[in-house]
Image 1 (cartoon, rainbow, N blue to C red):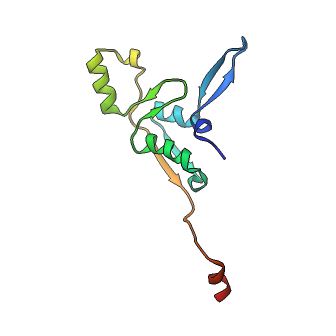
Image 2: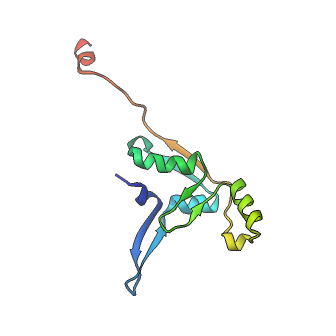
Image 3: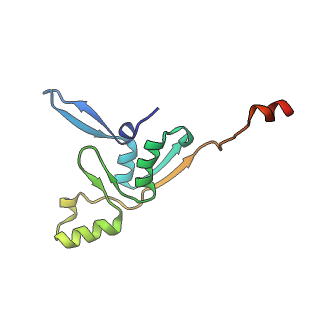
Length: 116
C-alpha cells in the first residue's frame, strides 16, 4: 500500500520543530547509480506506477522537496547552458538500473472453474 510519496521521500520533523524531506532508498539508488529491484510491482497502484514510469522510462523525476533528477543528456545540456559546475548542480551518477518482478495477471471466471 505504498503511495508515490512513500516510495520517493518522507517528511520528518527536526528537533527544532521544522520539517524536512528524507529521500527513500529508491531515490538514493538513482542518485548513486545503484541497482534497484522492485519486487511485487504488480501490487502497486496505478498512480504510483505513473510516478515510477517517469523515473524508469523517462529517467527524470520531480521530488517533493523541490529537487529534480534528470537524465544524463538533459543534465549535461543544462550544465553547459547555464555554465554551472557539477557541485552547483549536484552531479549524479548515470548508471542507475531497475529491475521489476511481479506476478502475471490470471483472469479466471467462475464458469471456467465450474466447467473443470
